[in-house]
Amino acid sequence: MNIRKALPDDAKGVAKVHVDSWKTTYKNIVPDAFLNKMSYESRERKWKEIISSRAVYVAETDEGEIIGFASGGEERTGKYPNYHGELYAIYILEAHQRKGLGKSLLKPIIESVKQKGLFSMTVLVLEENRSRLFYEALGAKKIDTLEVDISGKKLNELVYGWEDIRVIND
Image (cartoon, rainbow, N blue to C red; front, side, top):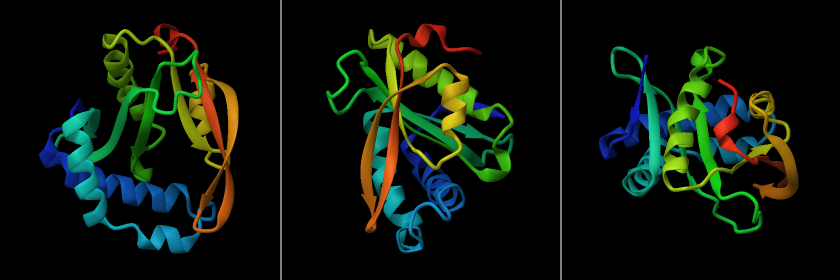
């Protein structure tokens, strides 16, 4: 297993992980109509752009297959003045979850955020997504609840925060 900074050429693999993990993680949470509309092609275009402009790291097998990714940077909303960094996304293919990859992908994001002089961080997660337990286990505290609308379905999105990312448990 290898964790490395993503390159624009990785956009296709990142897009596949993004779409496939949404379809497994959010099945029976997010409307099927939304999940069915997700395409590798549209996500690949978006990820090419994102990889060129912000910190994105990938987890790949020894054969070079991308099986997970994480992205982060400055907190984007300005709504949480005590939190300056943000974990934008972290997704791992279902078959590779619960093997420590989440922590391995989180580490370079934390380092990237710290290099910007930011030492606190948020992450948003749908309330029904069990991965929120991962953030809780790493010491994140719930700081807000937002209502989001995904294809006409109202869902709660929890905002978690770490006041000091330098103390996130290994």
